[in-house]
Picture 1 (cartoon, protein in one colour):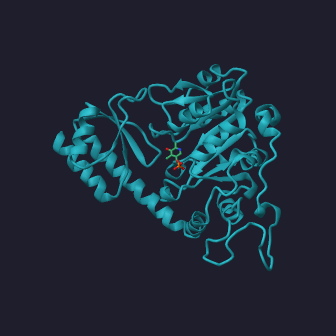
Picture 2 (tube, helix red, strand yellow):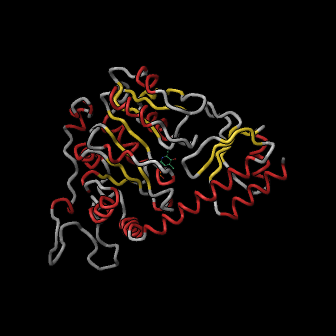
Picture 3 (spheres, protein in one colour):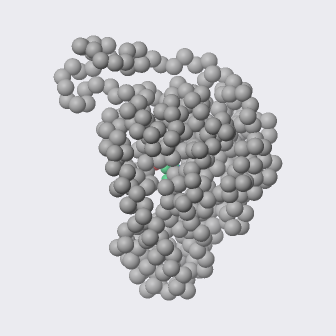
Length: 344
Ligand SMILES: *Cc1c(COP(=O)(O)O)cnc(C)c1O
């Protein structure tokens, strides 16, 4: 890996971050008269902890990392955007991503005026590290990988990812939004070995908290310190911090949901196999399944007419005639299968 100083934008390296009242004084006091807050207690009259230490300590225990290796964002969207703002000089640097993948990396690249280079996955959605490495040049700051990948559902090969980590001297992002649904371990255990790694996870999927907007970035303390310097000071509000803490105390609930979703996923795949309109079911390690049908546009519309909404991925690279179907409750899935059976 290059020195961090060569990877971080010069203005960010030199940035003197905003110092808020809660940065300058931490701890207990008789009277807080430093932040121009309303003094009357409503539970919400005080600014929240800008670095969310209570939440991070819980997450750190669960994930076997240090609290200082975690950045919490407004969804994963915030750390994705921060990666551009910290590392990529607009109109000069570029990033490389697999294709197809999650759309947000490309949108953030466009917003930040950073070239977005796409490398197609193979026909079976597997990753060829050499192709990715070939598209890298001296201005490539970041490679975006997503495993399990969206919208394809598959995990990327450990050996191919390792090849990228060894062959590239910039930042490598692995988006693990769906890792809770996979039986393979997270890349979190490799953070020490590969200091260039940034791992993204989220409370939006398995944890059932999409509405709370909270994502996690894990990286070296040094990389996290740059994210903290650039993020809005009070990005995670106190309602979200309290809610996340409460959910972290009840991991069983999440684990039971994951079990149920995985058993529903197995059932769904078995049932889909029986349908003549289904041409191929791609292997999945996520809470959704990508399915090739005879005519995705037609089947999508017919499902909408039946009150069932799936994601039409027909126009996505390598996903012609594919629908992405989220695994729902037993009832949701029954409704979908009933509708599809009536069309077949
Ligand atoms: C759903 C999803 C996310 C989660 O985004 P949030 O902003 O945390 O809700 C992140 N990455 C991928 C690949 C996703 O599919």
